[in-house]
Image 1 (tube, rainbow, N blue to C red):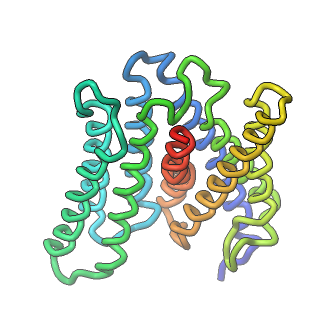
Image 2 (tube, rainbow, N blue to C red; image 1 turned 90 degrees about the horizontal axis):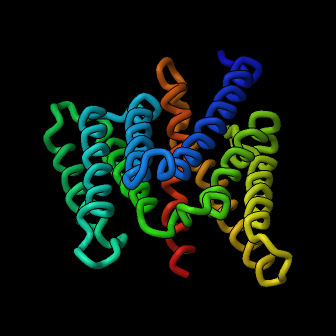
Length: 275
């Protein structure tokens, strides 16, 4: 029988690794345009999508794993092409283009289940795994839209920094103090959630730049919203992994816990950009 004393060091190491990878992912998204050039952010998003797809299989071990990986990778490439390259000439690209990817991808997911060799075990679980992976891959493509990540000339003012700070703070606090737990059997705790929200507010207030009341209120609101969404997304990512902690699953689990919350936060960043 595995005891809490046996699993706690492994959980602590996983949280620290996830914090490092999440921070590196945000840094990649923010710095790639300056370091690589015009298509730097596209390259960064492709890297994160590849990391998510590669980590998904060992972390979640879905039935029909090969098909899940192929559909996830195809959806990622299709979403990036739709948003970054195939936007209507003269018009700014919009999230509606992703529907042209999501619809066929979900149909293909159903066909994938029908074409699996019998016995077709865990059909519902496999279909859900494909749907979640496809949705996450497409959501990451939203980071290619103008103003979602922030001004490329002003990295210090990007709302993505708020998300990154919240994710890193949440994992680091959970590595040290995971109790009281947010749910039974979870290694994500209430202190970690509060730390994530607090880190989001602090970074957002720092980015607001001035002490004017309007800026303080705006910064606080942005920090609360993004910090809370990032914290809940991180908790959800850990829940998706469940008990899949066997051999080969640790690295994949770290990748999913670091990148999946960024995908969940991408639509919120889009909403804040257009408000």
